[in-house]
Image (cartoon, rainbow, N blue to C red; front, side, top):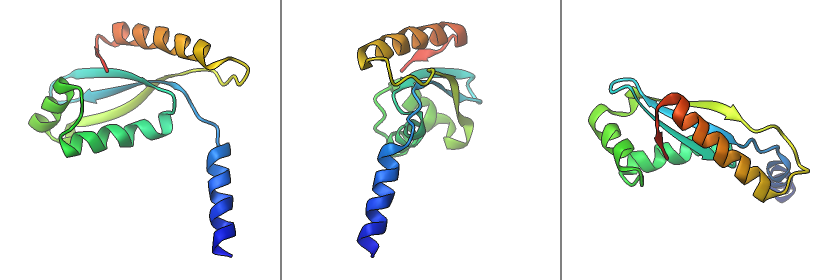
Length: 113
């Protein structure tokens, strides 16, 4: 019985709609903004916060600000979502995401991550 429930949960997870887009990580204390893009916006915040807490985030300026100001100074915001289209091949969606990411880096005067 438990095995069936687990299989159902796994199937539901695999069938969920994945949102692709651009996000911003902001530091209220330093007024810095880091802008990134992700193929799955629902998981990226947890990934970033985990690497920052562990001291292993690959973006040195972000990690340094996290150490200097602490986690309470940071916020996460989704700034743009790609329209949901299952018809587009992955390389087209990736190209659109790359362009959108660049636009938001300029718009927010942020650091590309």
